[in-house]
Image (cartoon, rainbow, N blue to C red):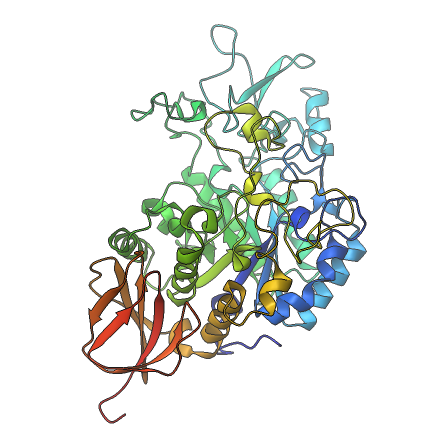
Length: 537
């Protein structure tokens, strides 16, 4: 099935559903237990069948893999673990042949300590690249320059005995922060973006974009008033001087300007600061991100009233004319099927694709993959190793994709780099492709409905009063009204209707084209899309 846009006049990043792929965990082609580009290439027909319009790839650049690719040692080459630049080019070509766009993860905040830039910067205080990173003298008492903490635990400053200064690292000590105050750094990174844009990449997801700039005065962070024994130690201070600094916005504007040197490209960004800050990452006096990523659906208590409030808050927080975006899964967040259970995972899927804006989901969400059970002792994620005991391990959601019910789930012929997890027999692609009522079938139908129904892409969003655990809203175009009703409870509900309608789709996939009159009856954990009929219908 070839992906078709709902309206060719609307930018592709508004029309399509975006599918995040963590390449290590998608498909292995050479038996080493780690996914790679050729493995992904072998699955592009599945992506076309599913109907996604773009894939977002986590980093595939050269890396010592201390943070599994988010520590880059060469921005303009592919790590041999994943393949070669030629493999990457073939993958892009194959996806484009199926009208699927390619969004590449880029990591501007830091490099690996093995990157040639840092090797030179560390070699001498007089090296021309010394100021490409954040260096500082010891503080007044001989220790780190200030109280800044790494997000991975401990001080964010690492002593370099050779040059007798500290360097700053917001994450691992092997991930020194680039000095974005330096225009040479910004120019070099602009060239990195151009390198991949010339290889026909359609856009970027910018990692950790809100932490690009740090306070040049190196002032201490203030205490976090909510810090207690249950709060992870890295959150001891409020990150006033290291998060979402005003300069950061101008750096994002510069990236956007580079992207706009090429036609029909998009810029997505990982942002910090919650809903209240998300609006500033859209267009200011100069354009910033097309899509600042929004994790509200993953971070909100799953109750109709709470969801309705969060959705309203988010839509009101973004600027007029800005395009919303919603995320249901990520390589950094627990799986939605494990958070909610399979029944409500169907409700979450319908909500994702019916809301106004661009939907993003994570490979495996469509088959209800659960978090794999991985103990702290067996964890490979450095976050868990450095900040144990707070549930920060990201390995469970990074478990390999299940393609079939065989011993290695069709992912590899070798030993998978992480355990596959439970329920492989029923939660795999092959089993669900043959089941017309499976979660995978629901995802495919939701994607197709959004692609073919203009009211769901560019239509108006009209919230309705949500009561007794049922989330209600409408999507409207000039000639059509779609009512979405989502029962977030494990018990049946009845909702009064002002107008009759025809049921277009339900989450159980066992009702279609039913006429609904004055009362809508929802079974437990059921969601429906109803086309509201005119009085003459």
